Length: 144
Image 1 (cartoon, one colour):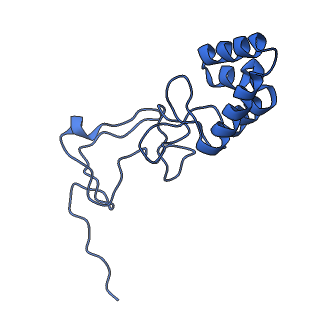
Image 2 (cartoon, rainbow, N blue to C red):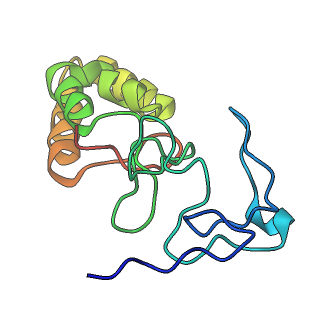
């Protein structure tokens, strides 16, 4: 078995150029400002972030993306559906998802029809559980 060749002068054993200033705690390094990318096979210093080995979280989508690239809501489909089934006549599931207009309409219909309009909330809850739904910002409700 042979030993690997010695690194060229002016670089460390891992191939990083010596002209790159050392990185201090809490400071990121942007390679485009240095004018050179890291060597192939090496990630930039400081990656992966602490606490996320191999995973780079997106602050704009903390719960991930659906199959169409839309970020998931912070609201859950199961909770919204059950609230609509149990107290749908009061529009509680719709208030939970942020649809205040629909929630107020469900309260009004339930009141004006002497409780028969609560059927709207019950059916709405079943549809949320089966088909999913969106929150007030248009993001799909997450599964869990």
